[in-house]
Length: 502
Image (cartoon, rainbow, N blue to C red; front, top):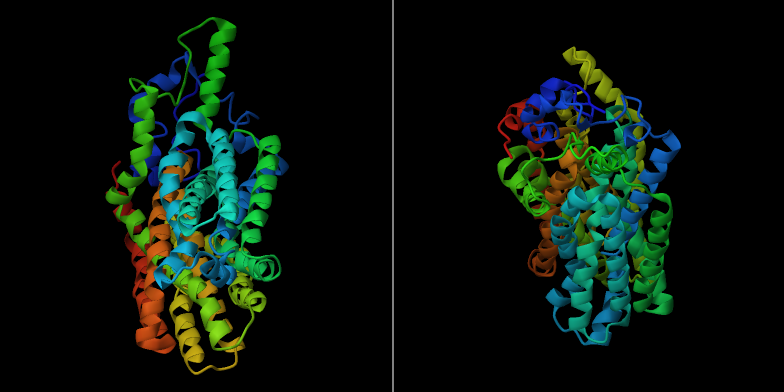
């Protein structure tokens, strides 16, 4: 039942990495090192214990990864699925303000940012599984509320609350993947998981355009609730708990009951902390991480800018292609396919060269384990595509060049955005480990979704003032201004990580 301390953390980072990451050390605090040899401390039954999610069969691991990815996909279709039918909604509710019509799309995203800050840390107290199931039920319930809304006030409230619950898989997903994977297999799993936030906002309006055109905007929410309910039912029957702290506490409880030894306790039990204090600590950790970790703050700001720019485009595609190119509501949804094709291409590139780049950097530096900063190499190479794509999209739309050319610009934006989000998620999971990954990703998501909610509100006024050419040029320069960030973090990230205290 007991075990000796290990110099390599469970997420596979080296002991040097762990020493520079005070958050990861929280999984096995220094004061626990003596207790780890205590026979009353419950640990896994050796390195091959099948109860440890890291030792599950490949099929079982991938089943969980796929379900979590599907939950994230449906949740990320919801922000933009109603975008092609927004003019129908504006007409039905008598909305006369461009700000309100934009918020009808982006207010969901505000919920995505705030909800996980409150909901996802509960997984550290009650486990990941109950949080997934409860959040999905609330998500589907308020989607149905959107479909049944009778005025704009109801719609806005339900829109925010559905996002509030819907963001949970995004915040918990990285932690769940870290629970069941090691560094060698994590990249592929995170790649699949990242397709949700990247392709969801693209696939949503493609489907939503045809649904709104044929059945009306309310059916976009009925369809979402059906999809969310179906994946939720699958999760109830197929998923199991993966959080190692919860699993070891349950094991200790079983052993206490079977051996009549009340002294048995999990090696991850935090002494002198009541459940309420543990919950309070878990709730404030994402904010504290964001404030005290310069690495997390910089990466979160970069991701926030890129996704704010993408959502600004999402909310203006319909007006641009319907007014300047004469597209119908159904066809206007297809304009998001440029982004979708780019994201698929980016995924192929990532899977093809990602592991090779990692191996090359390890060989060049003479190390046998990858540093978290190695995840940033592809971001350094491809993130400039966001700014260049904005230039192409803006000026070709300004002069009404054939519609395929601005779509090529949006494809470049999507390609670059993938290599901002994907390396960031891998970087943060490697940095903070399974114990704090949910909190770190929750903090990252908060800034991303705040930006995605409010930056698009500036879009209509900016385009009226500057036009599509100069307006997107301004946005392109903002994106290029962050390009040096991963370069600097690659060189100085380890030094900055050493300054992180939580």
